[in-house]
Amino acid sequence: MEEKLLEKIDEISDQMIEGIKRIVRIDSVEGTPCEDMPFGKGVNDALEETLKLAHELGFETENVDHMVGIAKYGSGDDYIGIMGHLDVVPVGDGWKKPPFSAYEDENGRIYSRGILDNKGPILANLYALYAIKELQIQLKHPVWVLFGTNEETGFHDLEHYLKVKKPPIMGWTPDCKYPVVYAERGRGVYQIKADMNHQKEFNAFVNEYLLSSDDHANKLGLAIQDEEFGIMQLRNKKLVDEEGKLVFEFSLSYPAVITNEEILKQIRSKLSDHLELACISNYDPVRFEKDCFLCQTLKETYEKVTGMDGTPVTTTGGTYAKIMPNIVPFGPSFPGQKGIGHNPNEWMDRSDLIKNAKIYALSILRVADGE
Image (cartoon, rainbow, N blue to C red):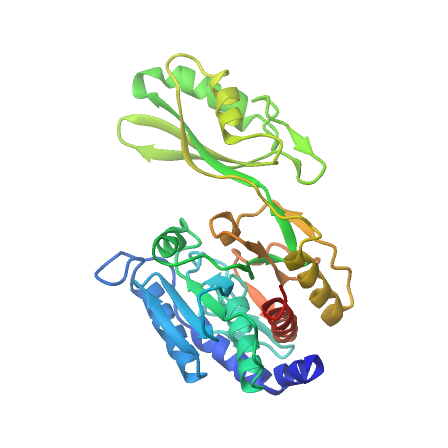
């Protein structure tokens, strides 16, 4: 059955690529909220067109309050969940071709905002499930492909989803890298604030502890590391415009040996009386056992399709796994593919989309028919 499934992916590959291009051509950068469009018209257009595509493929679909779309295969609520997102980051400058053209060159490389992050990969999962459906394979557990709409700017889509729906019993998000990621660092966003008449103290702190610091928060006394995650990372340093206030924002990507509360305590120990510290957001580290059923199954399917080592890894990034219980990051980028997603000329190869679909098809088959 597995070989037939892989052959089916090859058979539907052109259909899949055209379906992906259809959705990628929609400009789904977050826009102004309006009625029934909580993240703007472009994002909503992408959601509605994706659900239309899923319906055309024969899936039962559901629109969860214009925030999350679902394509369902099988019955029941104890589902395997695969979740990606349809919203994209702003385009920026430096594109060789129109950023929503889904232009494909002679080597099969497709350029478009969202082709990698994350429309291409989540739709590869939809077509992987479509191949299973077309072969009339019955699974022990239902499988839901979830299409989020607010991954890039806040996870408000899944926050709402979890208020009205059960989480999956297990699953993955194709919004990171291969092999399967068993653990994500914690990620906090912080602000140093001061009144305008304390600019001297504000500038001194920012210059000493943030701007002149290395990228590991050493000056703050936070250059902490562990064997799994490595060393603390200080990122995204910037001034923030706030009326009547001086505000400097930064983020920390932190290992599991420290908590957000400990981070806040350490930063406060460096502050003078006229400076304030605010935690804007925080997501604690996420960790699965490397030998759990889910991680081992995804390891084995990756190895079968690619022939490469699938030993589970960690990541410094942040995905839907931060907020959705029971899921791990899994794909779509292969080893050596870095710095593509948020940059000009974002790309994904046709051959990699097909390879991803094969990995995901086998993964759905084995996970949904497993424990």
